[in-house]
Length: 388
Image (cartoon, rainbow, N blue to C red; front, top):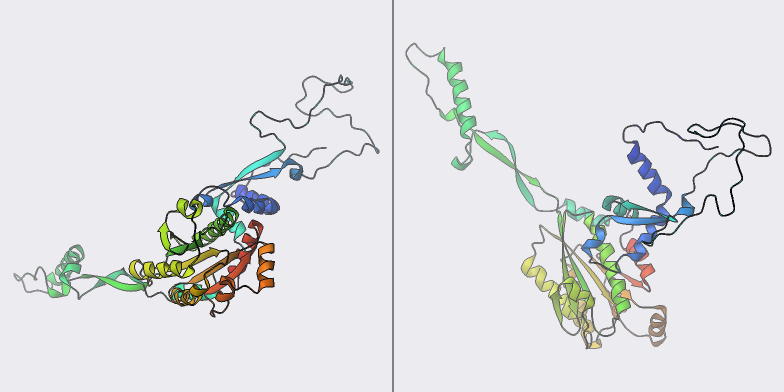
């Protein structure tokens, strides 16, 4: 027996039903993150997303007639051919209802597709993440102020005089004082007490603009797989910060033994040769911040991805430049991309790398993590921005 509820949905019930559906299939929705970063640009990855759910997982509970305890002789509404007591012929071989069929387009009815809005997508993936408390406090304590209107005042500069309000005040005074004046003596048309000036007060404004520097080693040791893992990390970080700021500016800094600023395509897909000097990339970020960014109005974040290689003679300069960057930014997130085999070799050889050197730097602004595969990126990001 099938039960069909044909009651009309109440006000806002569609939204409630959608939220219940999303909650029920949250596990399927979260799997969509595995495909992030494989194609498209970082900013394009934050739009609406199609989510596919296998049809076998869409089965709903229902009621069925127990064939062992009785029989049903009802004719269902809508039937135009059968009457009570009629018998139904057994279908011929090959007839009858068929199962799910494929289609020429490649999309059969063995899965269900729906579109998850940008806001819903971000809320699901980042529900367990938040900006660290020390960053939230820095947003509250911003020194940026904006003048806002706050009524009128009797004193001010000529440029702020409100002529309409002044004449209204003068007219009201003339009407009020006309009866008290001796006959034949008219009150003055405009007096000093009539002057009204627009009043402004300073109100603190939260910082709604952020600049995010993506820094990556593009030497030969960083292969395509390492770069794709880095891209996924950068994309998820951008999506997370986009929830906190009205406007985000992305700056792409790549380096080998020299550093330069490039566009996103060149950042991820150009091939370079040579060694690695991380200090050059950090120095370029310092220079850009000093020359182009007003820190009282903009929050700055740095995300760095590397396989950990660096020339030994550059380690000291690297730490010097890192300390300078940390004094100017809200947060510095570093991920070291290396598989288990490479990590084990470094351990056996007691090899020094960026992870070891960065571990020497104290403070809460710098957070470092290791990433072995694309599946590790999302859990690592959750560690970097775990709710406190």
